[in-house]
Image (cartoon, rainbow, N blue to C red; front, side, top):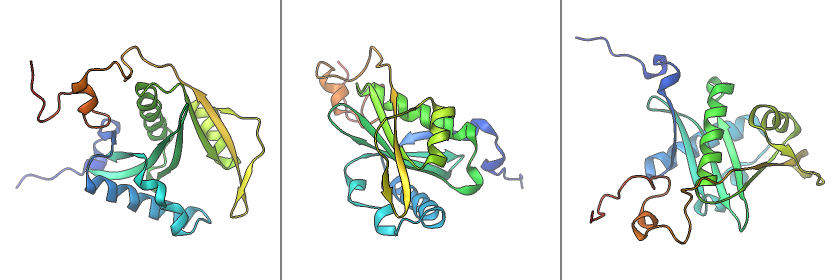
Length: 189
């Protein structure tokens, strides 16, 4: 019998990020958030998982088939807000976070948004600034559960093939994040 390889041993190339499109992926996101937020923060569960989870785009990171990181994007008139970014403790590597964040920034820009914001404690805000190029916004911090959260912003370059009202009807029917692939029931002309 052939020895089975552990996907966790597959190295850097096994790491990938996707927009959540299935119930199983959604459960993976909630599991990661439950692990990370209940262990790493003062947030109660009803704050870590809230009503905004039904009105956003979830993003999941995998190492092989193992869910290791997740977050969500909420959409506003002229910006997108990155929230609930969390990686399981043993998968907290800068290279993974950078790949994840670049995927998120790219996804936001593809939808035509020029600004992404996030709110972070000073400890994590430093990481978002140094590693991901976000800039601190000159606004008073908000306090939640005894910890201050500051706002950070990143200006994004919108690609020429961004989705607009002028995009094809077929493209606008496609599943979130799969705009470059024909839909399952799409008729090719």
